[in-house]
Length: 121
Length: 107
Image 1 (spheres, rainbow over the protein chains, first blue to last red):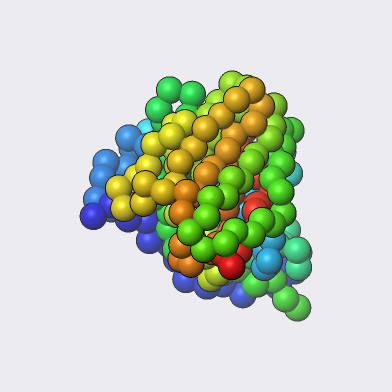
Image 2 (cartoon, helix red, strand yellow; image 1 turned 90 degrees about the vertical axis):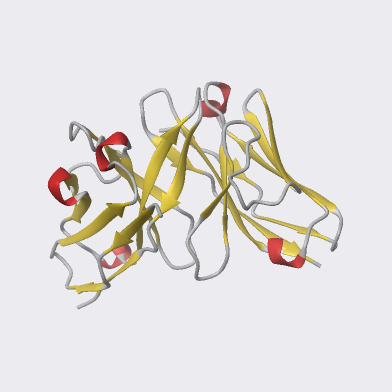
């Protein structure tokens, strides 16, 4: 079945970087974009950016511009999200999701189970 | 950047109907998508492309839109519908945005 499997929980110190992976299976990886979101404890979902899995083009939320890098490895059917200069406010659950498009409608039909990132000194 | 505004919380009696709204300029150009998220769980797609439900989503969930407002309606709410609901849209710049979220309580 179609699924996105994310890497395990991370604990990082302030100022460090974290790289989270999202491995796709059950479909042609390059046929769909992958988005990254995060959700701090008790807070709303927050969109971070997306990558065109076919050509590697990316777009980032202005909030994370300069700190986030989304890449992909087509041979491994895996997308990656790297966030640098971590601070305590980056403690959150990080999700990847597959994008679908249907005439003026963009939606995410398959989600990874999330990766907990804790930033603590 | 675009924003999507939702009421923070609504409550509904078991078996009754509740409507959740989402407002934002991007909804004039793009349809809203709706996700359900229960505590400690991953968001689940419930409505996409105006009023389509993925397989497995009960037909008591429906969507509609008008102008800059999208709505999710639960007709005959069940106890298992108690969750947070988020709307989502793309904007004309290619950015995506999630709504502020609505907590639905079933009484």
